Length: 119
Image (cartoon, rainbow, N blue to C red; front, side, top):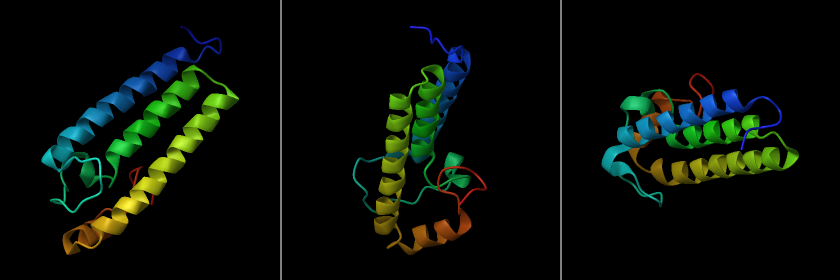
């Protein structure tokens, strides 16, 4: 259903960009993908060269796209709640992953969690 706010095209672009980023992040992650935070091989290639959590970042881009296309207070609240959950989960994961010296070194090399050049 088209948006009444006229921002549907921009929202669609953001949704598509987020989907492309999600595919790129999943491909970069390879066999290290998992639902639970577990020590696996540290991935430092692909999108993981720029940020430590590109998959979560892609989900947030898609959430913003949905918000832009369908602007409402409800959607804004859902997007903010979702972003807060991704930040929380990333911190929990890093608590587990930083036990690995290789991941701790990776964190020093790639300081940005979600957005390149932003801590």
